[in-house]
Image 1 (cartoon, rainbow, N blue to C red):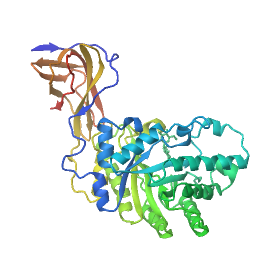
Image 2 (cartoon, helix red, strand yellow; image 1 turned 30 degrees about the vertical axis):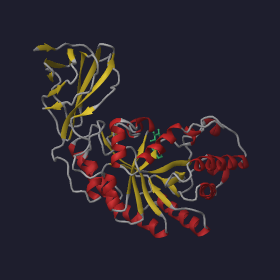
Image 3 (cartoon, rainbow, N blue to C red; image 1 turned 180 degrees about the horizontal axis):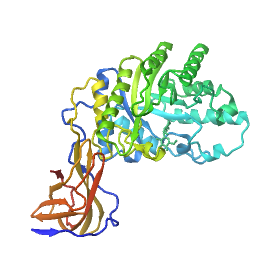
Length: 447
Ligand code: 9MR
């Protein structure tokens, strides 16, 4: 046995090629959210990033969800960055993944004030030109996916907080009827897709949701095709509107479907067990409100993992908004959704810590690795991580941990200065090792 403790830095380490968790993505006995949803007549979805749909991310997206929404891939700026030159790669990839996993796709989004191509926003258009551009955009994109998508967020975020129309390229250039026209053009391009208007801060009964209500009512009266409203539900911890179910019900009573389209619930970082418990209650309350109304047909989270969320970059100091942590372990929030859908399993009440192993740079005889110990709802004052190499790999030096290797068995313990892993925090250590033939990722155990 050799003791290997050095003080080298981690700077040479590149992003991990492989990641394996000590904790499984969810308890083996848990029923996937998508199956729990089916039993309640609900489709359970997530926003996704196409490039990430492999490995653990792809496994969870495919296993747990029955609907995917491209987070960005179908926006105008993504699909037509240069006028007349289209890029459907990521959108096509997500649709193909969904088909392979028997999932619906919610198209997002056709008419918005944001994430438009610069050629469009910088152009100077007459009203007639703008209308033609919009009609062509809708016909092209909806037509491309005709018969493949369950729904489209045709119009996104048309209202101000006070219920007046938002001043946008579309409203300013075409008037309020851009909404009716967009819906009509979308229906013509794919008669089977359900057509939605989607907005945020319309979850409870308030001026903005009442404006949306009045718009939907008048569109229905005019015979304009409108099938549903999307309540985005980008919520703040502890602030689920008390009128959520009542609001869903009033839209249902108008004769349209309702979807919770972009659910996330952000909190002040670092997260602690009290916040995560509140988040579970909040996710459960939102899901329960959807379960309570038959016409609430879809509940979609805006990214299922904290490593794939818009929140942290948009709200400094806020985050941890999704049901899985950044290492793909389900958080209490996951179980909040599951319980509201009739699932019975519950997470360990004390929270958990786990370790993940990843390979950084690798060359013909050696590689660098990193192991991260993370805690959520629990904490550590010292730690030990063990694994067994399956292909003759040997550790040659380690930093930020004391590692020993005996045969194939590796044991690493904390250094004097990094034994503490707080609730919601993580600690990493690195190592160099040799390999030949193959370099499979071992299962690591914390304890
Ligand atoms: O999740 C999207 C993020 O990656 C983009 O940077 C951002 C740009 O505005 O849009 C995010 O998604 C938005 C969605 O399309 C509409 N509702 C609000 C969402 C969060 O900003």
